[in-house]
Figure 1 (cartoon, rainbow, N blue to C red):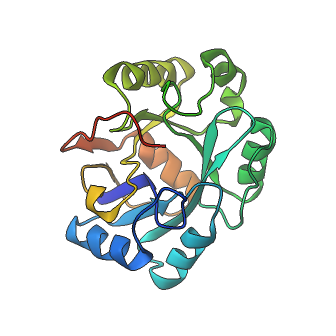
Figure 2: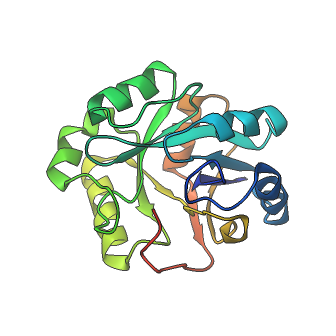
Length: 202
């Protein structure tokens, strides 16, 4: 089984603290097999990580739309911020990537209203149902919404420093393609070892 963290940040994010080398070292310490670097509104760090650690890296970006935030996974280029969410999601899919909605119902960060999540459902691949910075009610509501929409659920650490890696991850079978990854993620094991729990990360 592969240990995968699908939501984390480096110093390429305005609020990230750690270098790529620090993230690589910490990922190895935590025995993480894949990490998706999802910096805010930039894919530069993720593409650099793919170059220096291709066996570890999944290229991603957490992009701010005109409404909530959307993560693109397995992308090859930047998605500009402040697009309509439909356009941002379509650009991710045009690159062969997956759309991942982080902290979807958390009142402390940019998020989509539940009715918009329903409207956008055909464009959504994954819904984050556990984020350690969200309060329990927001995580529970996200999990319930994902179930109602029959969407794949994910746990993401939303780490902003290397030290925060290893508190939560997914355990997933080896995959052969992006489509296979999504199918395997549906049956993945969610692991949470500690909660950051302040509800204040971006």
